[in-house]
Image (tube, rainbow, N blue to C red):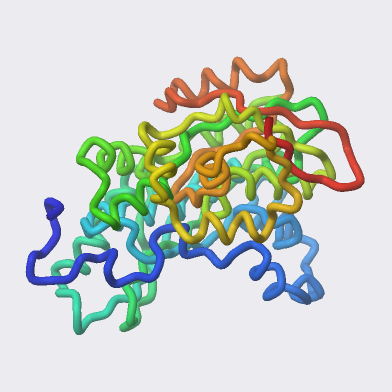
Length: 354
């Protein structure tokens, strides 16, 4: 029983068929769904749309300002309603930071089974979301609610950025180094939690990482030598690295031994405590991801593990790495480290893991 869970109500995670960013539609299926949408009229002010699967849309307002707009919502990844709200809001705001923007306000998206959950529990979910928004320094200025079979919460997040500072996921340059801001393994931890096999220490670590706002984003975007950014979420480290590779037409190389992992997740994955989304992710893009013959099953699961509110993945020149790490450390991201590099432009962009 978590500190805010109502004993008369079902566990929040029991009301969802998949939690957090593990709810995402698999990349291959999503690609089929979105076929043809790129043919819609595109205004000249739209700087970033859907063409490279970026983190948010960016619309130029004038020579000094561009609007960053994104939306993200999902079903419960934890049973504590306050923690669920905090995680969902932090995750949604992250896409603004991933473009280099500064959040300015949010709208709440709320779908709740009102015949199952009390108004008090639903209010606590919104309270958790408001806590994350206050930490980001933004107000929740409205939203929309519906009566839903499954509990759903998230935000429309809006931000501002100078047009010259926008960082797309497709901006990687050959020779760049890749820096990851947070350790991975949230999906594995969520699977362990759902099966009652995640202890208090693991739960606390999971909450700490998923509620940590990616505040280095704007400062990183303003740093000369930072060429691209994205955040690692539902498609896993391999999937989001692959989006970078395809957007720039390059090969991305990941050094698996350097990738930071949340404590204990490799052991949990080895016990089979993985999400269904991990397998769906790899089935969708595995043909473009090369792993060593000796790569263990648990490592492959972690490579495609869906991250909820994951870290920033930054592509920067080798000369900029120290400055990037200093920014991360100043914002409290002690696990940030170099996890790979960008190879040359190639005919078949992909990810190579060593």
